Image 1 (cartoon, helix red, strand yellow):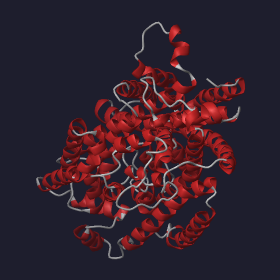
Image 2 (cartoon, one colour):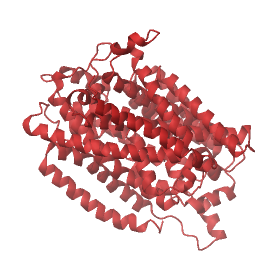
Image 3 (tube, helix red, strand yellow):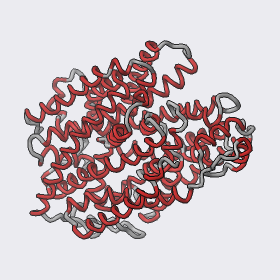
Image 4 (cartoon, one colour):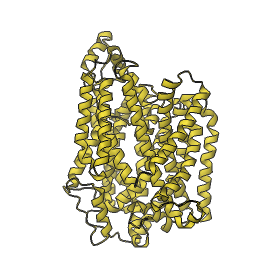
Length: 613
């Protein structure tokens, strides 16, 4: 363990600040339900964008990305398309605006604006989206919980403290014990202060992480001036062909084993994996945000215009800082690989331990404390944001709708507290059944989210799609996803996505035609308010009959153009800090040039036209 008293003081100060923030915003959060869950829809877009970016800057994902960068090099920038990361570009260009126009508090409440408040399948559609939201929130909480425990285990080895524990803990559950301890801090400030304390806590954490990431970037760049990275051919290039073509055999043989176990090649072909991942990611992005913290931040903005700005700000505020940290830690890990112990409690090499191992062994006093405080904050912000989303569904869509619709403000806030505690307990218990970060990631993005896509694409773009279709499509997708995750190895789940998507799509279409269309008055209200493009012609004609001056949305081509160049800009923002730290001068200049051109174009095709939309 390498924790200087200065580092310990920094960490302690940060943890105490989270308690102070929770207590400070407790009174403001208790004003009403919207103040607690959505910050009263009064927070400016840049604060919410920074908070949303902080929620995505999670400790588990960062450990995973550092391990990917270590093994795959520049090609690692594509693998997070599994989420897909470019969904933020779709949100930025038009989907955040569409979503915010509903003025809803949760995804389930949003459904009432699309399908109505009553009728065949309406209640079932709301129940299924609540179930999905809670499943995904609990999955993300377990995912973060595992990563935190693995992270802390390196700094506080179990052998040092097991003598003080009155019960025996099997080696595979050691990270979980550490996870429980720090989960309590996240639970405290987020339950007390609601969205207000979550946003302020995220801002504090982001400030710490920015200082730490820039500092470590300078250290890595300095080390690279006197050390040569011993990596395979192709490690420095983001481009690839049919095959991955990275061979670690004569350098670090265990890295080849990781490549095989990761399964990021379908039938041995990375190009096919990329195509499948992009196919899945495109439809996932069209579906809009899943019902978690990202959706809650969009619904918390002050206007549809600010919702778009917030989603755009996320990429700018997140990617350069995060990837400065990722490439710096990966480079230091490569330089000092043979001086690190990457074995887990069971004695196996675990590349996800590179991040904590580098911090523990090769960073100076002060920076260690800042980075640890920031990464602990990364876990806490992700955990608290996800918990807030789960609370919203339990309280707003279950308790206030079915149990106690006339609950007082005091009773509602009390129920939020109880729901938060219950969600944390269940998320922690679920975490004990998860093997590692990558396993949980595969279950969430390859299986569970695969079942979400079909219904949620159709709800935006097809007028005939109704609540019955939404319910049966979601149910078919979720059940199929759960079965697939049980019987198919994690690394092969992406191969089965087309079948999963087809079954969910089939359930959506059959369920739609098994019931009557949504009431035309509801459809006209939704279409005239949200103004989506897609297959809405009968509704469009009905709206025009009432209001001949109505202008339909004709921005499909412009939106898709902006998405295409926005995705390129997102890739540039990702790879720019990597080229900077690695001192790849020509690629860096080319990346800056491409980014500058795209910014000028988007200023005219997106930013200047936000009010027109």
